[in-house]
Length: 475
Image (cartoon, rainbow, N blue to C red; front, side, top):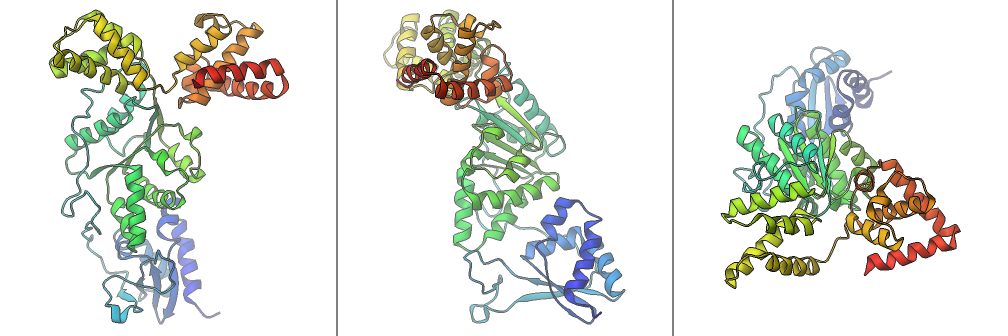
């Protein structure tokens, strides 16, 4: 049977597939198309110049062996470089081809026995906010580990961040996904990791970007017909930090491009750090193949800080601002603002401002006024503590009874309702809800939610409980 370009390339692929990692094969060899076979020269089409350079830098030896097995020692490989047309026009186009010769295809014959020097990879296009000469990290140096105080609510995430910053890409925490509710310090911790890496490894390229900005850049790259350049730019990053990754929900094109960038970085030992307001299991409209990759590393939750941690945060804030405040006032603020760190620091700033501008002494009474106004004006993200109090009051029991181990039916139902509404009204994970409502596990919370759903449809009295509590929590 006469040899064809496809048959030769298929045989090469069988050999290559047996000798490299499956994901590397999928990323770098599946996109290649066999074009023609002339004498001992096999022409293959690759998506871009970067793609060709990567093959020559990393896979030239295996290509040489595979092709020599098929065509002999004089075999040659010709790359046909064609850029993808993201507007859907089937007319092929290439970089640096004059408009009068737009249908031309740039190709270059390369003998695979030739040892190519590693190409110098340059920023392929200017991303808004990032200078072309040097990729700026976009990190905020004020967000560091020194002012990210450790407590029970963040110990796992903080220590994982320290491990990553000590050895980026070299731990099992890759990707590191930091998740939790609003104002709990996700962005702060992500920046702190990046800042620490830049201090320890100044030669590494670190980039922080919000998922929203990433999506905007992707849309712009499609508009300008340089989607591949967009991908290749991000593949050059050593440590990629993407904030609020849940923003990619429902954006299929951005998810697809991020999937390929993520695969490339992960395969090449680069570090990926993500933040989200939800755990992977709770993310909606994110492709399963992406969610599965989010779970490859570590998902670390930031929970609502406990009283002791809130005290430490306030004292640290006051120390950094050079302000002294009496212990009982600090305790009062920490006791009454529980939902998140952002509100906690906002309240202390408001208190200091009121004292300075109005020349009032900082007293418990002033603190009470500020806290009441602050909590009222910032309008709640309903907290799990608040839900437990409302449910307990409704069933005329205290919170300790609601959280107890008793199996009395009316207490069990009250506890299940608290878990149901915590899942409905907060962004906390199932594990976090269970931990705060009697130290139960996530499976107990899941069972409680299913039970409430079932009883709401079969038990008229129970349905009234749900309706009454919904009104109280929605006010």
